[in-house]
Image 1 (cartoon, rainbow, N blue to C red):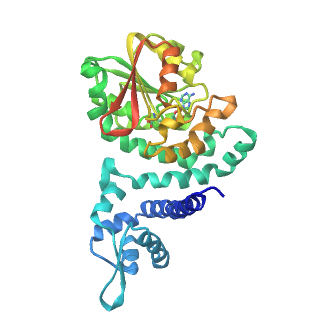
Image 2 (cartoon, rainbow, N blue to C red):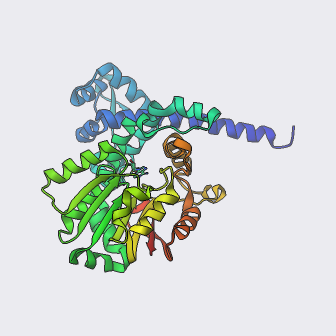
Length: 365
Ligand SMILES: C[S@@+](CC[C@H](N)C(=O)[O-])C[C@H]1O[C@@H](n2cnc3c(N)ncnc32)[C@H](O)[C@@H]1O
């Protein structure tokens, strides 16, 4: 046995125990977030018994007591002995500031649902994929699509019109949006970004494109409910030249929020964006802030989490039908190379105010 081997094994054993505890805690925190227990405890403020917390949340006291055992042991809630020896629990307000909806942009509680949902949707086909190399179709992820919609909602409502768009092209885009230009949101999902932009810039015309019929029907419904006449939606494969040909050269600005790396033909989709843009047009691709070289991601504070989400969703959906399967961690170097190959003459990789998860690839035709 080499010197230091036993110490290393002991240290790694400690690390593994920490992983078992934290993996379990992720699930328990996700349950607390989903069931409304954190919201209930946040409004209680004072230490309370398991029965009082369960009553306040409208949930089963026996389940809540077991759950409190986990989050108490995990340091998420404080545990103390009150009058009469009764055990009481309190969610510190500083924890509520990260775990409840009042956290707004600092809400990390919402992300604890991601791994459990993906496990439920795709553990079996992903395990099969290790043997077959096959992808997993979008249709396997109904629960995850709804969750992504919830995340996108929080992100776009908070950032898009007030923070993101004013920073594009040094503020010049905003002027043009107010004057009136043609804009396409590619991989628009349920259409929230296009709807928010259409509402903020009535002089401009917007089109949202997505391959999902369900997402587009939801997007149309939202636009109709809001009485918007300057936005339309279409079901199309972004990478198929036939399906986007009549937009050729007609768009002044194209956006793709988290919508390129999942695609089966991402290079084709980027080429389609380039074709859609008028001369001098701009493309904003917002995608995960990571490097293509895994060694350079070793000090990324969320690399293991993001690679896991990619393994369980982004990579397998992108591998479907023999697709590229880039995965969420394709990284900025590969993204830049693909954007240049698609025909963009200028590609700037910019940080996004109040969004440390993503880069803004600002590209000019
Ligand atoms: C992670 S979601 C992002 C949705 C939206 N942009 C947002 O910010 O919430 C990726 C979207 O890309 C769409 N998509 C995947 N492949 C596509 C393709 N080939 N053409 C058009 N849309 C596609 C999916 O249906 C999905 O709605």
